[in-house]
Image 1 (cartoon, rainbow, N blue to C red):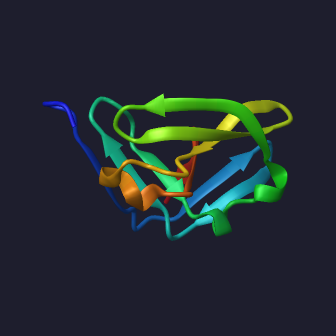
Image 2 (image 1 turned 180 degrees about the horizontal axis):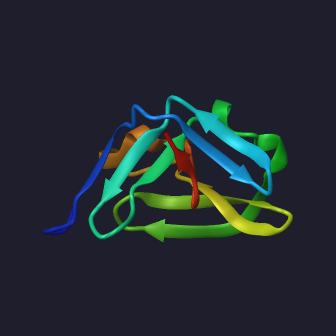
Image 3 (image 1 turned 60 degrees about the vertical axis):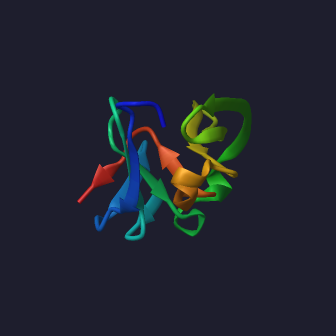
Length: 107
């Protein structure tokens, strides 16, 4: 990590739910929270808690120097709504194959 940049990953201990247009896309009590300097907290959900049958793999891939290469999934009206790191950097290995949504409900 560069000086002043920090990432932590830990169990969130919260109930995380993702709803879009009235449809539940994901719901988990096992989410991980990733905290990264200068960015909002992100919740990474295990794949078994995500409605993968509703998502379509996207051609989009991005690279983060701290987390690695991300793959994306879309809904018909929401491109690149979800991402994951299939082979994350060692410092964030816990998020491997977990999925992250831009907007979540946390309770």
